[in-house]
Image (cartoon, rainbow, N blue to C red; front, side):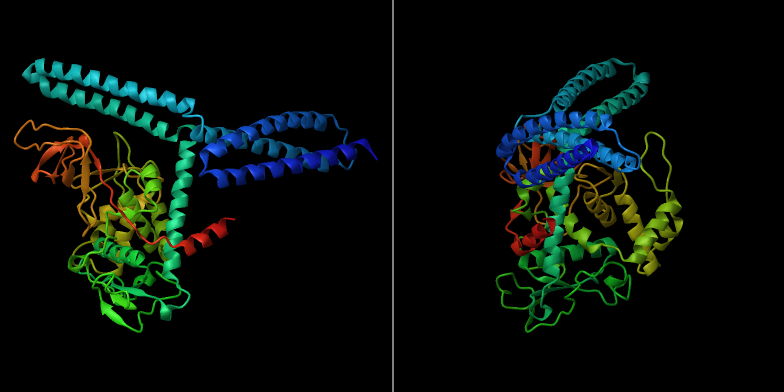
Length: 524
C-alpha cells in the first residue's frame, strides 16, 4: 500500500469523527438549553475535548502539507484539504458559541457586557452632572441670551442621550445575548403560529367548534383588522376555529381571501348542528357555532381580551420583550396579513419604485418618501375601494419597515404598523415616537401600572404614590409625567413616569399540546 493512501484514509476517519462531534455539540445545546447548570458542566467537558481536537487539527494540517500527492490524485488531495479547512472553521465557530452560551448560563456576564454596563453607568452620571451645571448657567444667563442658550443645551442633551442609547444597544447584543434574543423570538413566534394553524385547520370541519366573525364593521381598514384580531383572540381562547365572513367586504367584494391568504385551508363553512349568539364561554359550551358581536357590544366579556397574555408564555415574554401585550397582539396580525402572491409582488415593485432602503429615518437631514396616488386614494370619496385598500396596506407595510416609527397612536394605521414591526425584530417595543397617545387596543381591558417608588405631590395636579399602588393609566404626556388614577385612593392626576412599571395581566389560555408535539416532531 502506498504511504499517502493510508494517511488519507486515517485523515478521512478523523474528519468523520469531527463531524460527528460537532453534530453532537449542536444537538446537546438544543436539548439542554433549559437546564443551564447541567449544560455548563457538560460544556466544560466538551471544551476540553475541543482543545484536544484543535491540536489534532494542527497535526493533520502539517501532515496534509507534507504528504506527497501522486500525479492524478491532486484533485482528491485538494478536496480533502478543503474539508479540513471547512471543519476547522466550524470548530472555531462552535467554540465561540459554546463560550458565549457558558457565559450566559453558568459563569456570569462576559467581559464585553460588563464593560458596556459600566460605560452606560458612567454616561448616566455624566449626563446628570452636565444637566445640573447647564441649568444653573441657564438661570444666570442674560434674558436676551436664554433662548439661544436653551437651544444649544437641548442639542447637547440630544447628543448625550443618543450616546447612552447606543451603548445600551450594544449592551443588549453583547456576549451572545443578541443571538439568544433572535433565536428566542423566532422560537416563540413559531410556537404561536403553529398553534394558530392547528386551531384553524381541524381534521373534520363539520364537527369543529366555530366562532363566526363578520369583517364589515363600520370603520376603516385598520379598525376592521383589529376587529378580526379581537375575534381571533377569543376564538383561540375558547378553542374554536375562526370563520371569517368577508364576502362583499366593503374594501374588496371578493372577500379577504382575494387579498390575503385564507385564515383556514380546511374549514371555511360556518354551518353546524347548533348556532347561537355569544352569551359567554361557559354558557356556549354546547353550542357548535357561535356568532361574535363587535367588541363594544360584547357581554359578558371573556378574559382573553388585550392587554392580557397567555400564562404559559408569560415568563419567556417578560424576558424577551419590552411590551408583551403588543407582542401577543402582533402574532394574530402576523397570521392574518400574509399576502397573496399578487400583493407580495406589488409590495416588491413599490419598494423598488420608492427607492426604499435603510436607514429610513436620518438625522438631522431627511427626505420625504411618498406615493401621491396612495394619498389620493385615502380620500373619503375613494376610501372603500380596492385601490384604497392597496394604498393603506402599502402605507402600513412601509411604516412597519422603518427603523423608527413616528406617528400618532390614536391612529389605527399607526398601531397596526407598530404591531407588524414587532414581528420583524426580536423586540421593537421602543422603536417609536407617538405624537399623541400611548399604545392601546380598542375595547381592551383596563391598562394598569404598579408604583415602584413613592411620590409626594408637588402641586395640585400631582397624585401621591406608594410602592405597590395600582395606577390606571390614562396617558403619557411625553414630558416625564403620565396621567392616571390611583385606584387605592381614587385620585386622578399626574405622576412621574419612571416611578411605575407595567402590570401585565396573564390568562390561562389553552396550551394546544397536540400542536406543540407536531412542531417538536418537525424540528427533529
